[in-house]
Structures are given as structure tokens and as C-alpha cells.
Length: 137
Image 1 (spheres, one colour):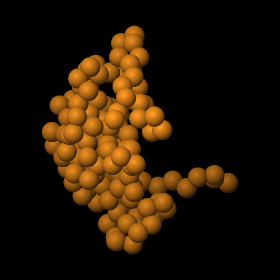
Image 2 (cartoon, helix red, strand yellow):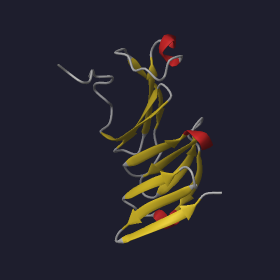
Image 3 (cartoon, one colour):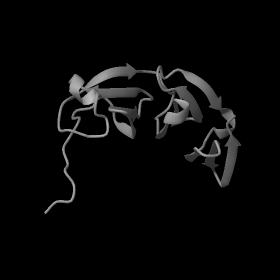
């Protein structure tokens, strides 16, 4: 008996994958070369049912080279604010629709972990031996 179904959605990625996040039916891959790869289901049928994963082909929809200068080590989608948060050299906010950088938290340079509190709009991150909290308005 197997409690989970497993299957490979992608093989032979062009870059080493450092982080992964999903949004609707899309899969966002943060790579070691600082690029962001966006994969989507090949068929239109899957785009209408994002809550269900099917064993089907995913194709590269966008390849954003230069998304970050360093490896993208962590990402988080904030759907209610249409944002993508990424951790690379520092923490950056991107528009979810275009992946355009909106803001960069320069005080988070050298951060190694972060989390987002949706209810209060808090961004918490760890840097060296410190924990910092920012509030997003």
C-alpha cells in the first residue's frame, strides 16, 4: 500500500534547482545560477483545475535569467497580495504576474531564512545571530 502517488514532473533541468514553489497550476524553480524557471502544464485542461496534480507533461513557460545575482535559496508566494518573495543575496518582493522586482530589503543582505505572516503583514528573517521583523504596509 502506498499513501502517496509520486511521479516526475520534470527531468533534465537546465540548472541546479535550489528552491521550488507552486502557484495555481504553475511550478516556480529557483536555480543556482540566479535564474527563475516557470513551468506550466502542457495542456489547457490542467490550467482549469490547479488544485489537482496529474501525471502529465510540464513545459517551460518562462526562463528569467538574471532574476537574482546569486542562487535563489528560498521563495514564497503571497497570493492575497499578488507577490513572490525570494531569498537570494537579500530578500526581494516581485509582482507575481510579471516577476518584476518591486522592492529589495537591503537590511536583509546575508539572510539565510525568512517567513511571511500573512495576517499581520510581517516579514521575519534570520541573519547571522539575529532575527529581524519588518512590517509591510
